Length: 129
Image (cartoon, rainbow, N blue to C red; front, side, top):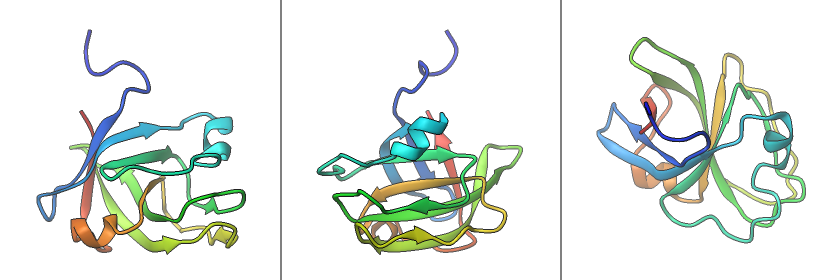
């Protein structure tokens, strides 16, 4: 077996700042998984997150929790992705985050994660085991 089983949580690391963004990141790759995202969850534990690959926008409709969101570009040769946009403390029912040009995925994280990890636009993040 090579790598983690499908949909097994993996880590997200900010390679620019040598910090951990999230220790347990789930992936929502299907259309339904992306639509549902974190809807219905009453909390998102510290150190966890949801990766929405091939996504350049998200919505906050039907959400019960606030989140941070990091939009990333396409993976480079080493698997890392450039941070294109960061959104702190998105509140439930506040609508749609405008589409982020060039984004190829979004990390949804507990509020405060962006500041805690020191992540800024231009950093490089690697998602994987």
